[in-house]
Image (cartoon, rainbow, N blue to C red):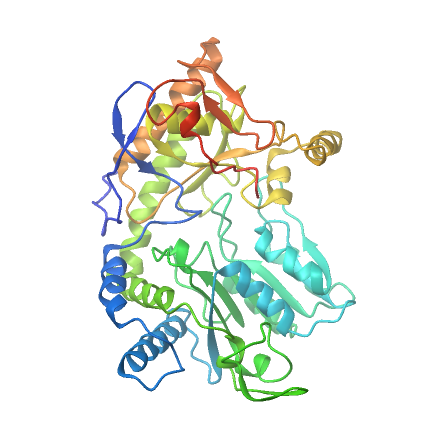
Length: 467
């Protein structure tokens, strides 16, 4: 017996689109790749459509349309501050492209020294690993076999010498959906005088953002606003001195050929013409999520998560990565099918069942290697092959991730498809058509003359190897 899952509180633009499959039929596309990017909420698309006639320059024009555009842009900034729970006087919201840009921006503006320590974890997305390594030294909180760590593990990193300048940590894993105990982690860091940078990219669509975090970064494209806007929130003082991350028009009060006088934040940090359409989309989606409510989102997601994980756990030959039952996670499950390459599983789900998932390392290589339990010699061997341009043996998993629009039927379609793939592998039954693997990407493509799946239809593809 399954728990009854309520109908989605909203559908997304593009839900129900039919896609071609290898058996010659078209099926409604089941998008189980929300952890990568989501479709647009209808309210977002409507807000963008209504705004486009008023599109104009922001902060740079006296015309009526410019005033309207500037008001819309600043409304997004105010909404973003409220969404993060930032109630401290002096916090600012900087509008940028996405979480990756936001963390790069902050890493630059914290004025770190090369010998400073940034404490982070092996669970992080590359966006919360790589920027810090360009500016300072990194110290890592390790994870256990299930891909989790404890508050005590974080405290050990905070108290090791030299003491860290900052703690950078994810609010939710994009691989396993695990939710670190952020309230306790933030409290432990603050007790030791260490500010916290929260990567909320994966958390923000699913749970409230802890207001106690000193800095927060998140992306609109994971929040049902796929128009290229992101947010960095932090204390105004961080951005009040020194050169901004980007230099150019809109960030200055005075310029001479050998002198510049930067303006005040947040405008100081937003050089160039801003993405006002992305801002309008962001404001609309945050308002719509507020209307739907976290209780509705969280309760329904818990039911989807239970159905997804229990279903995968029950399939012979399937191993779900990450923490087991009893540990809270988002409705995200990364798994491997015994005897079947992760890229082939994903290709078959798409070509034969019309299901979209992600495969590979999910821009979290160190974490996935630990979850898979790969020995050092195997890691060294595949890295050598990648350096030679061969991605065929890059390790990975398949990830299914739900949005607020995911239905129980879509989860069941995935489970039926994975069950068929696993059973076929166990019985030695080949796929209905051969699949060829591209050495340059590691991805598989069916050998078929069916519309949508001919060799000529392949185009550039969307290689998951690029992580």
